[in-house]
Length: 83
Length: 436
Image (spheres, each protein chain N blue to C red):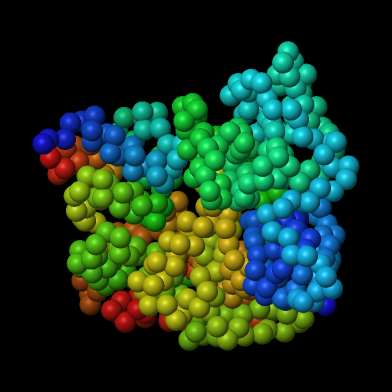
């Protein structure tokens, strides 16, 4: 099974909403830094990572955090890993 | 038998608002049972009874603000004089209250713009009397309600006859998001914030980042204003700061976290809190309270952690006994505390007794913060952002993750040299992360 861009985006959106219930990823400017735009502190971000790991069944190490910086990079990361 | 009185839930608390009774006359209460919900301006807190007894009379209506020490309920002896025990869930019906509010069930949903307006002016739509066709609520009705003097309508009567346990935060959230609590599916348990959010999400696409209701924001602001004004009026602050090399700590955490599941991951902020707690034990002069013209050392370390609640007030509840928590335990306690802060749920002790507070603005992107001490505490630790900087080691340049740590100290209690000793202790602890 491969993960489509839409599926990856849905995974991300779900994980983000668990921390920021009213977050709207489509309202973010392209390339915007997720942590900065959504004002995620390190605990918030860990919450997102935890949810993503669980839903996508991938191990996300701290070294992978830079790949989760923007919506686009996170979608690419999830497609590559969660396939 | 002593009365149940408005407790002091923080050193700076003079009065509190009774939000909700959790018991009714006739209820048997035991020491430690939650009896009422009290709003301290910082958070809604469930307050427990200090005694075993029977509730004889409720003396204060929900919605009433009273001074600390005011009797709220009369308690009788446990094997009381023939008052039959009544199930705690039975609501009382004080006279003359219902007439003020209790509108008929709404015929039409209120359109979102009007809901936002109501939230902005701090009006609970459930209490608004609609004058439009079919009792429809119009903007003028909301404005009229906003200018009406606050009527202490018991919260549970607002949603109609069936009494439901609703957490205070869920109730506030329902007001902001325009969710009718009566419309929520009938579960067995207490209605929580998550239920309200779910209901709000089901109804409409939520607008992003709506500001919180003005009323709530103002109350939170006023509390901070009073406390910080007092601090700057009374406390002669001194400030010291240092840059700490976090190379060892971040490397150690990175290695450690790779060997653990995501759920047990530890963030650098937790390691710095742990170091601050241990340093507070090493330098007890900064850990305690200024009381009646003298310093009183606390003996225990209850580390206040400044938590910014999204769209809400700033609170600094305590990680209790932080110096006795191993790093993984402290991390778990921190996550739990922050999660509960977002729901507005604290225990009495968490708000009442931080002995020293840490504010970490690193995630906000600033490199250093010199904070204002929370009276009656005598010190505040500031943590900045972890940044990579050129760093000289043994005559060579290296790139290292570093962080600016500061201490704001009360000069009545200590001198700058004490603050310096504290920061040096934190630095040393962060160079031996395996011992944290």
